[in-house]
View 1 (cartoon, rainbow, N blue to C red):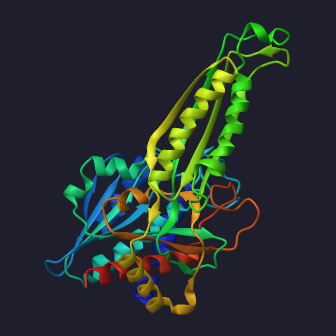
View 2: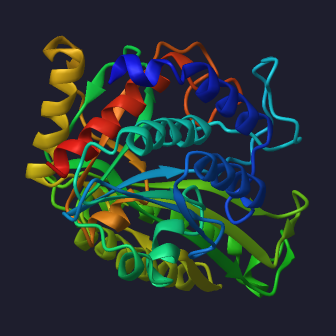
View 3: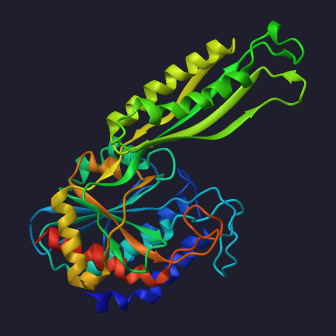
Length: 385
């Protein structure tokens, strides 16, 4: 299989570079979806589009009836100005593939190339090319639009490149892989006034300060010490001069944990802290949560063992590594709320300063395209055996 897919490497590399030149943000993936759909049609694969946004679903039937399995890749880019200096760098100012979704998409096209040509399996392989992973919950949008009713996969598998991990090495977690996430925006308002007369108005900056302090107590005092969690304030905006109490401050942040129950507890505590901070400072407070809660990515045991065994057979036991899970999030966890499956990491190699995930100097390592495609294709074949 490695040799067969290696023959497609030049084409996969060229596709990856073309997608890298044309990054599209979440909900904007029109060009990318059309590009992927065209490549699948060239392979003779049945194609469906527009399910929950700019998605593409490929359907590959095997040599006869049997079970079904899904393979997933994400397609969207990030609002980051690329500073890689690559000859195929982004042509769009302020947008780039800084997380490797162009590579994930090329990998899945590579797996599809092998599966469509050989069809050495019984049953059906569904290819889920997902939009809006970085924002807006593209996985949930696809499911809400009837994805699993129309394409009833029984298992699902996917992968993510991992900078800093030896190129081509594979990590398969037992259980949690990536955290569930939530995002929030807090607004404090008051009348505002002169800095010398604070008694005549509430103070939204003071409210914001109490909120930041209160948030630090969530993980320290509200969460079981054995349950990992984090709450981070990413922005605090308010005020225009040193001697004016402003009328409004706005804070934004994110919270992460490895269980939905913990995420819901954090959400409740944030609401309570907003009210308390506002009351202390004589202000009014409001909190808004973005896009609901994204569940954690938690591998199911049987599917994790399956893809681990396949990786060991393809690449050798020495290519299996072990790493702790991360507080970074991925909405692959939404699929795992409905289907058993596994999400694995494949090493992207060492990275320099400013070249990690979500950084302006990041680039996907083309040398892992064949390994990633081989692993997904072989996993699908094993799942349908």
